[in-house]
Amino acid sequence: MSELQGKVAVISGGAEGIGFYIAQSMAKQGMKVVIGDIDAKQLDIAREALEGLGAEVLAVEMDAVKIEDWQSLAEQTLTKFGKIHMLVNNAGVGASAGSIEKTNHKDWQWVLDVNLMGVIYGTQVLVPLMKQHGEGGWLINVASMAGMGGVPFAGAYTATKVAVVGMSESWYPELKPHNIQVSVLCPAFVKTRINLSHRNKQGEYQTPSSGSSSNSAPSPKALAMAEHMQNVIDNGLAPEVVGERVVEAILAKELYIFTHPNYRSVVQKRAKAIDDAFARAEKSPLLAHMLDEEIVGFS
Image 1: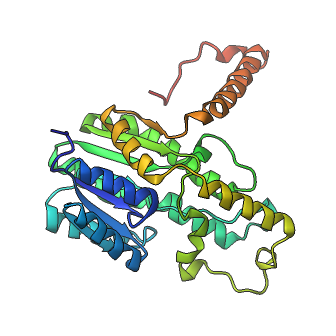
Image 2 (image 1 turned 45 degrees about the horizontal axis):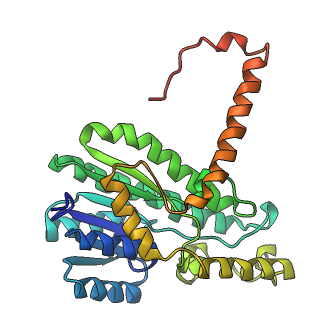
């Protein structure tokens, strides 16, 4: 019997894409699943699909940027299932590609709030409840390969995913004494609708059609980039595979969950560049006295 059998998993952004297929994979392991999503119509479709597989499901309409929605989701989950054993911080958006000067500040705030603050709120609300029952559990944060290195013209998205990787690395040793395993999922391109994230953009992040260069007609270069990205996503990894990979990885107690081994060379190149930079620092006469200093703050 799987160690996941009978446990309770909460998945934000669980109505479709990666979130839905993680929920499906957890349900196949015998977990009770709670899916939260901002899209009420898609949420109903997902709930019916999961129930059709025989899963025990709770579907909650919620906005990941509102901590009160997380609190309501937690209360509903405890009322229905009694405990929470797993949190999958999956809700996320992808902003339109743009240069530094043409990325609107409201787009920055939208991406930061959903991709970063949504993870923080979910973790702050649900992890204490996971600690209370003393049975341990799992915290899975969905980042991206963008969390492993900068992506040109995607500054806002990259910033949030780097932050999610860093927070996961920080929470890993912090939660280990509580038997809560932390993992961070870093997929490359997956066949989802993340490129259409604006369909669910909340009103407070909308920008009037006038007064912003970022809302002018897109340039031919921008249109070509959008078409290219659409083609890449359409040919991306099936989200079903990602869901099964997450199960495989958490049962193996992996911190970093990768789904695209072909990107290994990208991370290795970055790691080498960092190591080379340290080598240069070691040779600097300005820093020679630091070589024997105690390392503080890292475990």
